[in-house]
Length: 165
Image (cartoon, rainbow, N blue to C red; front, side, top):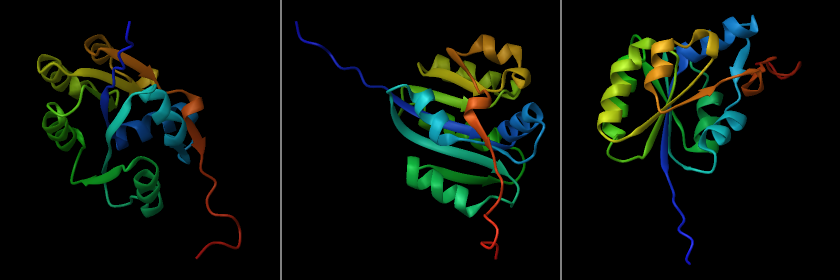
């Protein structure tokens, strides 16, 4: 009997402000950052990454961070005028016909309607978020919940002494 290899295409859409706030609250430090090199492979679990997009409100987006996301995952950082909710939702609906699974990195209950819509379109929807800041209704709606824990972040110490510009 022949073995059939099933490949799934996954898009990861990150509500940057929500995730940053969650890990800062959990770690009690504003220098804590998601370690995408650890988290993304865990979320994918052998599935193929179609797209990784980090939506972030505000102007202070590190160009080094954007470069690393692009180099490691062909990821993109999208600056948002206000909250990431609408741009992330629009991108998710655009991608719904192109991927099997969409992983939303956010615990925000504002995404419940988006999750319902995507599931009606036949897309598997997963959430990756910090447990203490994830809305219960969101956890109940999704196909799978990935808890973001201390293993998924690191403390940013800044550039080494003598390297500051």
